[in-house]
Amino acid sequence: MSKHLISPSILSGNFLELGKAVEMLNSSKADWLHIDVMDGSFVPNISFGIPVVEAICGASKLVNDVHLMIVNPEKYLESFSKAGAHQITVHYEATNHLHRCIYAIKELGCKAGVAINPHTPVELLYDILEDLDLVILMSVNPGFGGQKFIYRSLNKIETLKSEIVSRNLNTIIEVDGGVGLQNAEKILQSGADALVAGNAVFSDPQPIQVIDKLKSIGL
Ligand code: DX5
Ligand code: ZN
Image 1 (cartoon, rainbow, N blue to C red):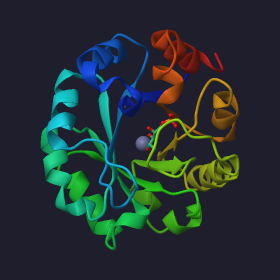
Image 2 (cartoon, rainbow, N blue to C red):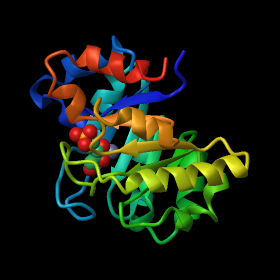
Image 3 (cartoon, rainbow, N blue to C red):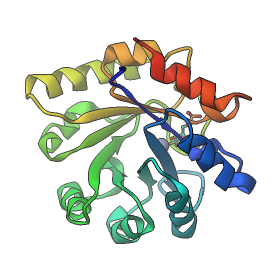
């Protein structure tokens, strides 16, 4: 069995048929369901809010992987937890009190993650790494699906992976942005544990097969 996890991003799904998109993911080999929440302030785009997240989580049988691209995420942690998030990731760049935020997520019973933008060095996470269940390394500038993978991200994956391994931690590295069949193997070889895929899955007429192929890499 492959060890890596696949987290398709519903942001690239057809919003008129969100239920069908979730059912498709439920019946696929996806491990997590990635839910991108954007506030039009932290990122230059607005996606969807708490009621929509609640509807998605209610229909999902997967691990609900909520990625908050919002300022002051601490204000909304409880709402997203109640909406059905199993893991909540906040941005390093979006809060002044990351440690407090991580512990607030854990107290809600969710796994806690921190995401960093492409310009943010992984070393800035070292003082908090032991407290994290996952790190989302953004390999595009957050805000939109369908962008091109920034190749320098591979170095960041390698650096973070060796730090995690050297400290004997279980922190999951999730790579988010521009991931598809063309580069997934290289990203996994660099040390990623989980792959987000939006456009690669939903723009394909056979999304279940794309997920299958992403999941089978390295088998
Ligand atoms: C970008 C989001 C990503 C995005 C991924 O701001 O965080 O999760 O939906 O989409 P693709 O795979 O199309 O780059
Ligand atoms: Zn995301």
